[in-house]
Picture (cartoon, rainbow, N blue to C red):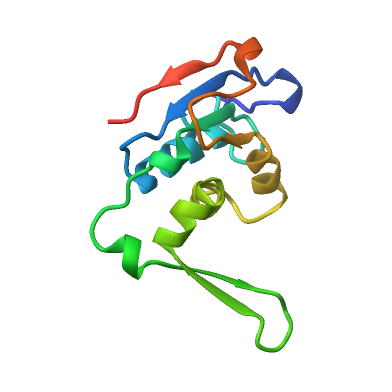
Length: 143
């Protein structure tokens, strides 16, 4: 019996919408990462980008449990001396909700060329509307 190996030419991609309103950030990010990698498909092949397109809406209304709003920190460095910038999760949620969700998903993807192409199929929006209506995305429920 031979194993099935997907070819990048034969990958069929679908579009999914995830509504992040009142859902924990980690659950939204992990579901999005699974869809982007293609692990929900029976034709999953680890070395091929066989994932689907993911649209996350209502990023501003995502939920963080526990004391993460005050305690969780996001760091950036400009690579200059003294260039470390720290932000709390509360500040990120108020000013940069899209970046907060994108960082969570990106951290769950492979850290290589393949992961970067998967990350390119992620679209995050602050509000309810998105410009991808023509692709007829399916709503993906998160429990």
